[in-house]
Image (tube, rainbow, N blue to C red; front, side):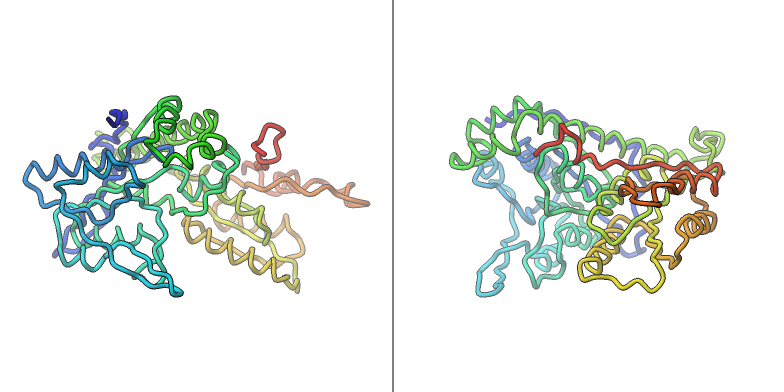
Length: 395
């Protein structure tokens, strides 16, 4: 019998207002079941909610269900109509994936779509499943979906540092931020490991490897904390949005010091390590309710290597995913260029990575953070450490 996982629900009064819709079609309601790892009961809870809505008289269908061989989950899907998967052939390999056109044509009131971070088979309408879900919502169909917290793009480095495992499939944090409702499916690490050992998460041949790698007790405890913190931050963010739209004399947030809005500037370079800095900066910006700019001060006439070109492209893509603003300024005077951009953008925080060790006469120069503080009094300057280099970091 599947255990009854605890839940932490973002209350109705704290939900962000839904995106604007056309007069003809009201956008569907999106509820996301969020968990710390596979096996906590997200899909099981989604199916239970589907049955409950069906019993209430609503037209409910399963758009995509991943049972991963779990008998209890498959059994719970009985009685809910399902849209058949569509076959896709890619490089002579037969694949199956969600049939988005069939869902839109069927037009149910509520659609259950598992694994929001899934990467679609090549050749479909969208590269990622969350983009399919957006189309379903835009058609006025309500959606229940599932997500593990480690798939959020801004947490990619943090999860790798905590667990030693780099998650390859990610989604923009804004996808979760736009959800009308987030339901946290909570379970203690000990209970999840018991389920794993009982064969309720993975088949027997994968249990040993899982216990020795991702499903270690310390990993799960850290991921649980991250998931709970994420939901708490979403609640705080949605509360601020909701309170600001009310009358001023009824709003606590309306009296907040909004005239001094925060804006972060992260200094980057075409180097893979800058992606870690960008994610950390974005998390800081979210907590402050601030916008984020990324700045690369490019030396004049510098020619980029192939690796640097790839890194720069990756930085631009990451900025696009996170909703950050990428700025490239050409100058041989880094402090002056940064100061000029900071004044133009109204920057209140500057974040930069640890400097490389100086050699020769360069060791006599004033460090960059100090030069920035001298040029920008009143602007906070923060050095962001590489946590993966800590002695206690997972190897």
